[in-house]
Image (cartoon, rainbow, N blue to C red; front, side):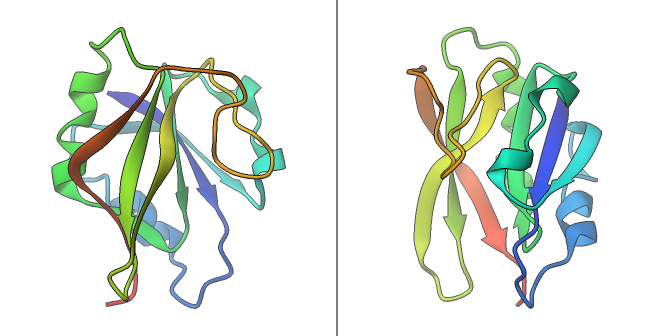
Length: 132
């Protein structure tokens, strides 16, 4: 699966965008473009040349187990957006939309689609905060 990755700067002491990018290295996901942004206003939808795009913060990595599911997403026709679970260093768990079809644009104040879309949650793994 080819993917456009947006990496949002977090200003976290645990930020390491190289680790964020390298968390994809043992997967079937090919990062066609990696774009760094400071806020959601910086997302340039015209630069998305893949069918799907993902946003991560520079203090996050993505588990292999979650990446194993991504290639199957390209074959599904029903959903436009996927929420992913995130676990921070203290064990707090949250989830929000992170993986979007290229046609889906998000709000500028938080990661949620501008228009009504078919949304599903992936339960197969985690986005994890770096630092342990």
